[in-house]
Amino acid sequence: MNVADIMTSPVLALRPGASVTDAARLMLTHQVSGLPVIAEDGTLAGIVSEGDFLRRSELGTERKHSGWLEFLVSPGQAAEEYTHAHGRKVEQIMRRDVVTTTPQASLEEVVELMSSRGVKRLPVIDGGKVVGIVARSDLMRAMLRVLPRGSAAHSHDERIRGEILAEFANQSWASNGAIRVKVDKGVVELSGTIFDERIRDAARVVAENIAGVTDVVDRITWVEPISGMLMTAPI
Image 1 (cartoon, rainbow, N blue to C red):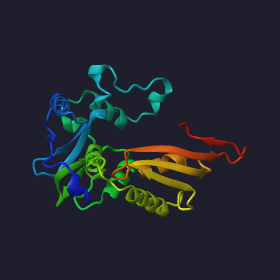
Image 2 (cartoon, rainbow, N blue to C red):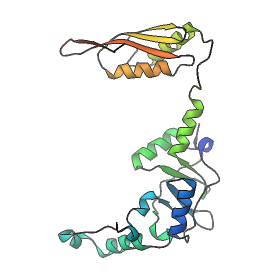
Image 3 (tube, rainbow, N blue to C red):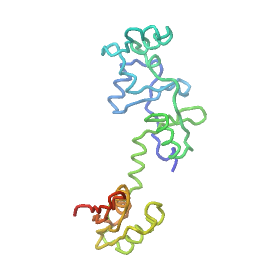
Image 4 (cartoon, rainbow, N blue to C red):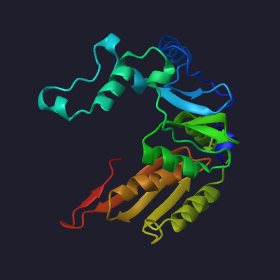
């Protein structure tokens, strides 16, 4: 699966000359937190998001530098902050250094970009033009499409147990066989001994992701490495 499979296209966008009022109204109407700004020739000019409306003169929230900090702000920076707080057009408040992606990029690449650059959406560029946008919500929808949709009424217990054990075998934290699995009419019982409490949650997630599982009973015992105390999950 790549960006082309999940991106939103055509793109809801703004022109650089659009008013700040129109931008805010469009975002609220369509319940989106950011929009690309596209020039007349279809190229990306910038992006505007909810964060660009935080430091505004209308709200009395424009950035202020008090005391000696005022002397550290260059005239250029001060002018930029003034334009952003008082500008009436999208091109005056938008960010121009936009992180983008391509239709062929993998979802792994998209997630890495979003995480490392701290952004929620990426315009999709192909041939120099904006052809779509991919946002965190698109990734969530993609996840829902591939998650198990529910229990199979007649799932065979042995199949369920086999799939759980197979996944455990592929995971370094569970490959030692310390976690035992029983399945009865779709109800999975996990038991055994672990030395790290985080393994309990991971084991439960494995079971919950298997089609046909109706419930997971946790009977795993945690051995605290220092004191040797035994702790089991409440029944």
